[in-house]
Length: 215
Image 1 (spheres, rainbow, N blue to C red):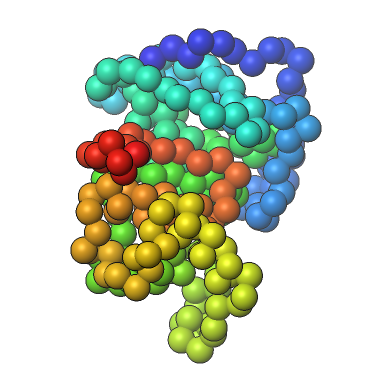
Image 2 (cartoon, rainbow, N blue to C red; image 1 turned 60 degrees about the horizontal axis):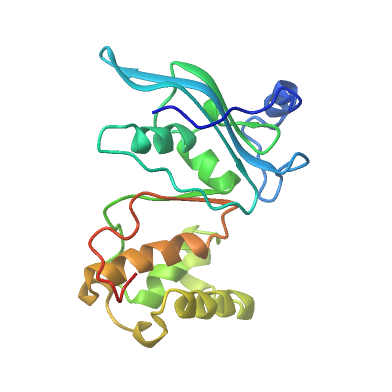
């Protein structure tokens, strides 16, 4: 799967900055001085001799919506795997913002840096309510004591309420997530990403299995 364009040479990505950040990336530390939020150059991935990606180059600007279209096996999911750290490329560069080298970070570190991903199949906590799913997904302190004894702050409740309206599940907040339709589960998982307030959101076939009304 070849990209339609490459990054111009005037954008110089700072390797030393990514080394300094290393494993200490803090939320909100994202250099968008060139307005580019994602930069891929000459990414190649092979599996047992099969070339899943061949010199893929792609840039996405902050605030831009980009749809990647291709048949099954074209490499769309592999590209997302590279961006989120699930798969390491055999060659090429992948930067988040100006200085965060994605090829040097683990999946949790990349998620912590601000990249959210929705997989094709919904992954939710079916025994918990819709509201609880969103609460569990928030970037809050997950240590046992904090989880058992802390209450949501007003701003956290407001964020969940806004997200419920955005994904059109505000009337289902107390309903067990397992009782939702397939399309509603898809939207719930999108909501679980939104409450994490990612800087870049990757959606892998987000409307698969949805009805016209649900999309």
